[in-house]
Length: 99
Image (cartoon, rainbow, N blue to C red; front, side):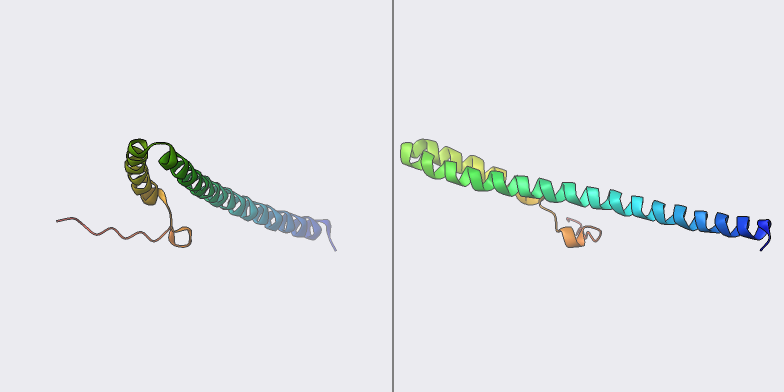
């Protein structure tokens, strides 16, 4: 084979490898984002579980304090429910207009 032909094939191969590297980088970035979302959801669920245990303890100590904690927790649950994501359908979001 001539040197030109070999050089052309090597350049083509290098181009293909470069394209594959870019694809892998894009996939890795997407995976990192999804991983961060998953970690945030785990943290929220763990904090919610922990606050439930604390609520049981506080009910035993003081009835009035437990009532206030329950109100605060219900408000926090409403906020957390808004933050929860359907990770399988994150690209499809339908919002109905309010009239």
